Amino acid sequence: MLSKPKRQWLMVASTTLLAVSTPSLANTPWAASVGAGVIYAPDYLGSDDYETRVWPTLNVSYGDLFYFNIRDGLGWNLIRHGNWRLSPFIAYTPGRDNDGDLRRLDKVDGGATAGLRIAYTDRAWSYSAGIQSPFTGDVDGYQLALKTRWRNQLSDQWIASLGANVTYSSDDWTKDMFGISDAESARSGLAPYSPDDYIRFGVSGSLTYSLSAHWAVTAMAGVTQLTGDAKDSPIVSDIGDATQAYTGLFLRYRF
Image (cartoon, rainbow, N blue to C red; front, side):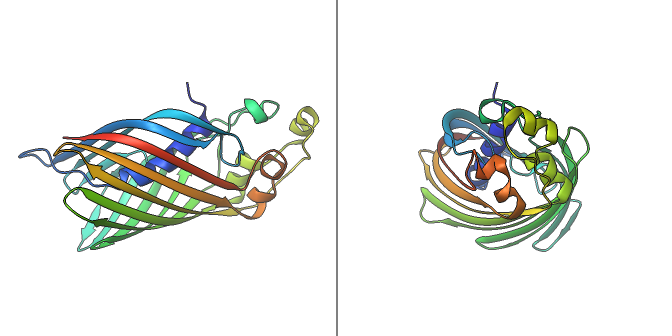
């Protein structure tokens, strides 16, 4: 089974893949796509060790009311006005596992989050701002995310997508993910560390080729930069890397 930090990177990578829209099922408001692929990504957020893994994808929507995908979780477009959407959502935030380089640190269980997202779409461009806070698991605090994405149909078969995001994590969230207690320090040899908040920057891109009316293949890549107290954590500065990259290739079936 994949560890929770590994799942975190796979969720981040899925952001690019799931940004590609899917056509509606015939004569119904449902739209869906499923797929699988391989991704080359860090073991955990802040790691300098990379692995190749297999990962599935799923994207489901019901008209303009409900949506579900790994990137955004399960959401309901409560308010729809022109190009604006306001949606409460439930998602998942991974924790921090304690294997590999982190084997002498405490495990941090991930959990479900509740949040609110506002989004605006203007032709090829989309923008969103969201806030979420965990209500299960060991991660506390809250997280704010700003995202922008450009998506364009280059031809009948080619679709390109580029995106950028900025994520702010509160003091409690950062302490749970990048902090080191005195007990953990004694076991691991890493210095004790009690961080405050931090900001993470990321860019990503994808290129999709339609093999047929239902089948498509997507290549994607991205990079994330940790800053502030997350970058200065011994988990990152001593045994990891503040710059995180990933790349992947996925095959997708559209219903």
